Image 1 (tube, rainbow, N blue to C red):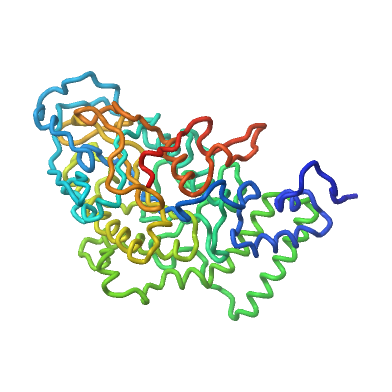
Image 2 (tube, helix red, strand yellow; image 1 turned 180 degrees about the horizontal axis):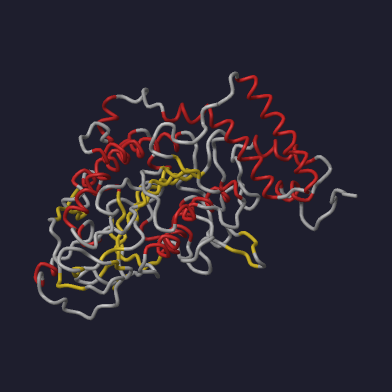
Amino acid sequence: MSHCHRYRPQPLSRRALLKSASCGFAAVALHALLGDKAFAASDVSSAPHHAAKAKNVIFLYMDGGPSQVDTFDPKPELAKYDGKPFPTKTEPTQFNNNGATLASPWKFKQYGESGLPISDLFPHLGSQADKLAMIHSMTSEFPEHTSANYFLHTGSGLQGRPSMGAWTTYGLGSENQDLPGFVVLNGGLIPPGGIDNFNSGFLPAAYQGSIFNPGDPPVANIRPADRTAALQKRKLGLIQQMDRAAQVNAGGDDQLESAIKNYELAYRMQTAVPELMDIRDETPATLEMYGLNEEFHNTKIYARQCLTARRLIERGVRFVELTCPGGNGDRWDQHANLLEGHEKNAQTVDKPIAGLLADLQQRGLLDSTLVVFAGEFGRTPFAQGANGRDHNPFAFTVWMAGGGVQGGVRYGQSDEFGYKTIENRLMIHDLHATMLHLLGVNHEQLTFRFSGRDMRLTDVHGEVVHDILA
């Protein structure tokens, strides 16, 4: 015979109540969760640990690893040694097909009042230089894509950990009950490591990333198949009744709880998603600013993603990640043909990202939106073969903007060749700690008990990079 637990050493959280009660309270608790403004927030952090600078995150994931010395970290010494043997000792690389020193094919200019150097690959982004905090001393523990992608997304090089988007929504929830709290806008490429880069891991399944595809509709089965709305509502009512009965019998099983939430969310998305994706209310000037009128097809794809990201955070979605379109020469992963591959990738994202930053600012959203641009590692300053670059985890550049970040600054330093970090060395855990800090979350306190241990996104590492904060 089941019974309700009335007494505990500490007051029951909403989640503890739902898990421990099997006397009919499950449905009541579920309704309370669905009615909460911080929808699906964990009981760990229903409120931030400290005053938050940012409310939302837009993560611009540059799949494959852009070359730091060709984008944001100019190294004039490379021109001096161009075509000559690389003058310092090299570490083993992914393919060990190392050629001569390779100078950047692109020139750098100083942009904005800050004079931030940005290469000719990003002429539009240069107009937003004074919003950017460049971090030139990022490192990774992994030199190959799959583990490096897991590390970037989950803080671990092993498969199965929760993504940073899942951790964020677990800690803070979402402010929109009709859309997922963590959305991945798929440009057409799923990165090495697959959708486990966006999964909830050992967190409840309600926190996993929901992948929106670039086509129409962006989500499968989003349009009702029933002949009438009344018929669909009756079917869903029966399913809900059966689910809740199963939940009571199971004593608050977490998998059932997550399934119920996801079914109910899917129903509400049938109205919210078509409205989200209908951009007819956007002005021609806005569409032009993002690049939706560009001739290059991939620019239009990424422009639509950036515009959708803005529309999502306007609607209270907590964490939005963008992946890159295909067809540009194997992501940013130019082991050969660096010139064409990096130019196509930059042409894809440059104008849309600049438009996104400008649009967020003019709408008063940039101060509350943290924008992060990062790949899983950088690339070597010496050639792979004749005209490519291999993976380089020893120093690469990421940047952040908005959401409490100081603009127009450079932090950290790589050596004269852009090969290894020599000042203010950071690792991915520090990036995660800083992102959570700006969201009002102490990365050491956002934990989940799993396998007898309090787990966290930053594991036992991570320091907030205070020097780039406004």
